[in-house]
Image (cartoon, rainbow over the protein chains, first blue to last red):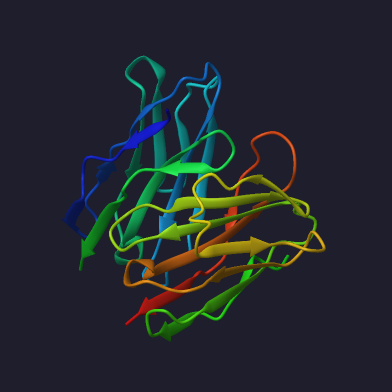
Amino acid sequence: AQKVTQAQTEISVVEKEDVTLDCVYETRDTTYYLFWYKQPPSGELVFLIRRNSFDEQNEISGRYSWNFQKSTSSFNFTITASQVVDSAVYFCALPDPDGLTFGKGTHLIIQP
Amino acid sequence: EAGVAQSPRYKIIEKRQSVAFWCNPISGHATLYWYQQILGQGPKLLIQFQNNGVVDDSQLPKDRFSAERLKGVDSTLKIQPAKLEDSAVYLCASRIAGGRSTQYFGPGTRLTVL
C-alpha cells in the first residue's frame, strides 16, 4: 500500500533561516506523482507542487525548492529565507490510487 | 476562477444528532472527493465521485455516513447519528477527470460533536 512518512512533527526556526521539510514515501507503482500542500491556520489546503516520478530534476519556485530523489524515495521541500507567513502545516501526498494518501504533516513555525 | 466552496464552515452538534455538509466543486471538475481530517493528522479519503457515480467509498463508515452527488456537480456528505470521534474537519476536493491531475481543496467544515 502507499505510504507517506513525514518524520518531523514540528519545526521552529527564526525568520530568514532556511528550513527543509522531509518526505519519504513507499509506493508499488512504477510511475507516480507526488504532491506538497500547505495548510495555513485558516484550514484550507493550498496546492504547492506536483511532481512526476519521471522527472528527477530539482524544482525551484521563488523561495521554495524541491529535491526529488527516486533512489531514496524522498521528496524534500526547502524554504529559503523563511518568513512568518510561511508558518503552516505542510503535507506531502501520493495518489492511492486516485485519492491522495497524506503524511501526518510537519508543523512549521517561523518566529519573528 | 472560483475555488471549491463548502458550507457551513463550522458546526457544533450533540452526539446522536445528524449533520450535513455541502460542497460545490470548481466548474468543469468531474471528480470530487470528501476527506476527513482529525486534529494532528493528514486528511483521509472518505469517498470519491466521478460525475454522479461513486468510484471509491471503501473507507466511508457506511453505517452512519452517506454522500451523494445527484447531478454530477454539488455534493452533500451526511452523518447520522454523529459520534464524538466524528469531530474533525471535512474537506472537499475536486479535479478535472483523467490522468493524475491536481486536486484542489475547499476551506473545509470544522465539526465539533459534544
